[in-house]
Image (cartoon, rainbow, N blue to C red):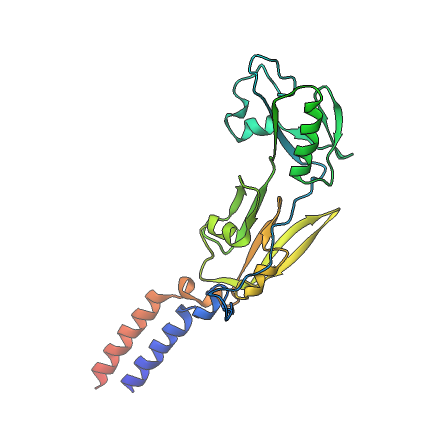
Length: 255
């Protein structure tokens, strides 16, 4: 009776406190090709197309520093570009009609173009006024939000041209043990609405998914496992161990 009771209690502990490795291991079904040590997956970072409401930071550098540069925003202010807020204040807002107001030129249509295409267009425009100039264009509003079963949920500013889902998760401190890796939701604005992509991190096919590379404004929501409330963090171990001690004392006394 005593051994049976202990066995039952041990089974109860392990059954309620552990999460199976099969539920937390990433990309479990990745295959290996016969001719190499790895398989090449075809996912590519999509080119983001400029939309109304975007903010573009445009920097025009002139080799001749003595020449006045009319394309540089807020030439008489020194503090703007030292932080994120400064870059935002110096950026160009894409209007509802899809254009920006550029010095000397006026409206330049940028909607539906990639960052590289906008940079090429503006370089041609600037070359008509000045030689030996270099134009660089950056998207200011590349932010993503990560919610749910991650260590550090929040909104993150991205300072690179592309970011995949696994990199985003690492920025948020990785998923918790109670995250449902089969149900990762990526909410993405599209036109006048939003699309929701369901991603399974246990499946190597994610590397071919159109949602593998994130886009500005994406929201990543990680669902919890259904049995989270009965797992380690919620299980009343103090009461359980007290019950075990009391039971053993009673059994010893009866014996």
